[in-house]
Amino acid sequence: MKASPGTCVNIVGAGLAGALLAVLLARRGFGVRLYERRPDPRQAAPERGRSINLALAARGIAALERAGVMAQVWPLTIEMRGRMVHERSGSAALQPYGQRPNEVIYSVGRADLNRVLIEEALRHAGVTVRFSHQACGVDLGRDRLRLRELASGAEHEVPLAPTIATDGAGSAVRTSLTTAGLLAVREEWLDHDYKELTIPAAAAGALDRHALHIWPRGGFMLIALPNTDGSFTATLFLTRTGERGFAALGAPDAVAAFFAREFPDAVALLPQLRDEFARNPQGQLGTVHTAPWHAGGAVLLLGDAAHAIVPFHGQGMNAAFEDCRVLDDLLDTDDHWESLFVAFERARRPNTEAIAQMALENYGEMRDAVLDARFLRLKSLAMGLERRFPDRFIPRYSMVMFHPEIPYAEALRRGALQARLLGELDAQGDSDPGLAERLIRERLAPVA
Ligand SMILES: Cc1cc2nc3c(=O)[nH]c(=O)nc-3n(C[C@H](O)[C@H](O)[C@H](O)COP(=O)(O)OP(=O)(O)OC[C@H]3O[C@@H](n4cnc5c(N)ncnc54)[C@H](O)[C@@H]3O)c2cc1C
Image (cartoon, rainbow, N blue to C red; front, side, top):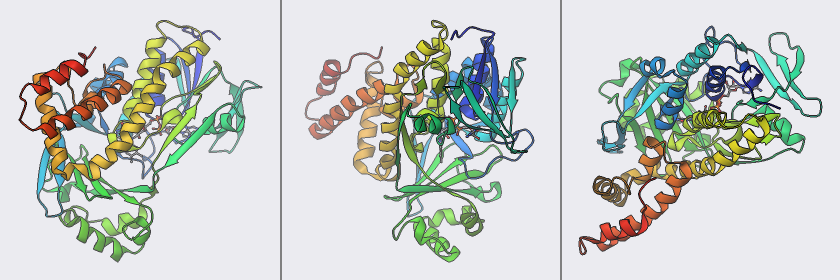
């Protein structure tokens, strides 16, 4: 099937990736039919319990710029310059994310960002969105996408056209392809769940609005990201079971006692703690590995539907947006859906596997290592090396968050070399002043 402008594409899921992809395809002249399970977000309240705000970084921004929407997105963002690490003693210290003024990340509300993208998509005459329409699956043999209209319960079918599934981590399209034996899925669930809580503007007090706050406690942690209305959204990450797990926090008194013991300086920030803890859903976290991501030229999975990851690097949405930008790039050189989908998977898979791994590794860093003296020493050493050799040594966190020109897989590869090198330099101390330069020139080629 030809991917030529004027032809029509179905997108299942008008979430973050689906809505952005609709804008990019519409700008190229494709017709787009979006099917979204939720009601119209311009009329209904957002779903509760789904990361209310997210960290937006350079990869996501590059894709949003490609779609021409950053002018509408900037007012929704709050700059976060570093991690504010809150110790049990109540003392707090800012660990900057980078060392240049532009090396910051941005908190953005999911619902607002999604609304901007949907509105932008709908500015194009060739785009339609059917809200409250749930995809039930695809039938490749009959070339059909099966849909249910949620208001009436009526089911109907449309031609595949092709169909790009951006229906998130629990993708129904992926499930139907798996059931048909067309792809294989492996889901790796963490034994840690999460729960979101509100720090109202009135209670936020002196909490720095330009930081991502972390209360690391070894096996678990609380974090908080700022919202534009002055409130923060806090998220507790905790094991499901065990003495210090969600299972032990069934009663409101147990919750209050847990917070008083583990996060004493956060208690005053969370005046609705007991109610919210009982009311808000407990979310699961995991990594989804899928292969392949497409069925011929008829169906492609993209974003979380293809490769959901744990949220500890703040990159799931950024990676999903990067998917959209890469697919858009490929449309410059390929006009057959099947070869396009093959090329997309070939280009993206090594990178999404790399960020999945780095996201898991970052959990240990956030909940634990940020308090560790060696971690802080190596971080400061890394920053010093970046200042001296900016074209060769860039801390891995910075490569991922601030350097969209460095693919995730390359960030992982260079990061491993750098970690080894930092270990060696740290062990050596100051005994050989020329060692850093020698090792870096020998082992790290300039960033391409
Ligand atoms: C706690 C938490 C914190 C996170 N923090 C960050 C962060 O700071 N930074 C970051 O980059 N990422 C973060 N993420 C990851 C991010 O949320 C996802 O990677 C991102 O939402 C993926 O976008 P998507 O469009 O692929 O999927 P989604 O955003 O999940 O969108 C899927 C859409 O499909 C719709 N849908 C689902 N099923 C159907 C169906 N059958 N038919 C029709 N429509 C359907 C849904 O309603 C939704 O609108 C976080 C995730 C979690 C859980």
